[in-house]
Length: 441
Image 1 (tube, rainbow, N blue to C red):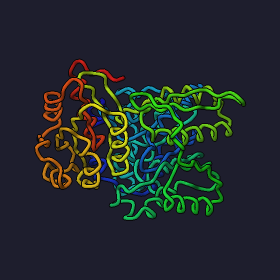
Image 2 (cartoon, one colour; image 1 turned 90 degrees about the vertical axis):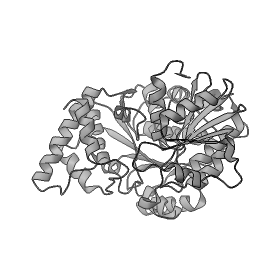
Image 3 (cartoon, rainbow, N blue to C red; image 1 turned 60 degrees about the vertical axis):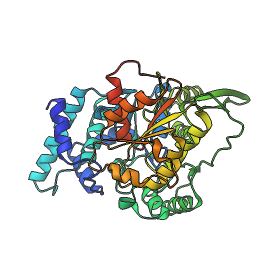
Image 4 (cartoon, rainbow, N blue to C red; image 1 turned 45 degrees about the vertical axis):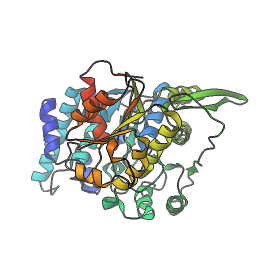
């Protein structure tokens, strides 16, 4: 298949957020028929509600600076599906993606014909297999796998990673993971198995209790990262935290994190603990590699700032916890008037997200996303907090209209903040990339 054919085939399986079929059996059967590619390298699996992608980005950057040939699997993508699979810091080519998709499709189709699978594996199950094939072919030494949804039944869990991490757990995807924080934490904690190294990021007491009990039941002594004390940190004008990092006994070095926001301190600390765990398992990760990795990490769509007139800020705050993080960032680091483009999925806690984010906007543009799960304009208007000045609200039917209007009404010294969904950010960036004067910094 050519790339366009491969993409069409995967999309024909159903949108990844609507065709979720939780369970490991299909993935395990598919991987076995592909020769168990995941057994040719070691793995780190990162689960959690918020911060797992940033933690993966930090760790991948550290490992590359340590000279480790690393594969990175993340989701969702912003513009091209090839963004999900990176080898040595570079996303795979469209030709490579198509070739591996062809192999997975043929294998899956044969399994269905033979009765070994009842139905074709889902979009996410097949993309996971595509990534693992690409990693095996590229002879990666380490694969860093971001969990797609939950943990217990997510297809990345079938890889049986030797090192696992759980970033902060919050309410999200309740229709799949449970209606309480305890239930959701239990789904994510299930990636902890006998023999793994486990790193636990800062948690609420409820979530931490569930995770610790899971560790005890599996005979695991976890590394638990406490919420960091941030008052002593120096922060750059655009929100990059600077902290003191011990590079050798008696020697400290200042490190400015590559990712913006105070919350990235905790994600960085989880990544450092993972790097140290990998070092104990034989990977040659020096303190210098850790420092350089933290400084140069990038993660598109998460407090990503583009330097143009007016500047553009993208943050996929897709649940209340992530919205609160963006609210904190805007309150502390943005002094100019904010035009906010907002669109989200209808199954999210829209009112909670709106109550946190909308008051930060001088102008608010509500738009629908081209996605079967997208909230309608009526849904978004219904989420507007009581007392919010309705004269500040504009509604448009497409992302392209939203981008055009935002650039039209925002002064050069203002800021356009696009948020609410990574799908919205991907659509907006694709539009902006076709225009001049938008350069990431």
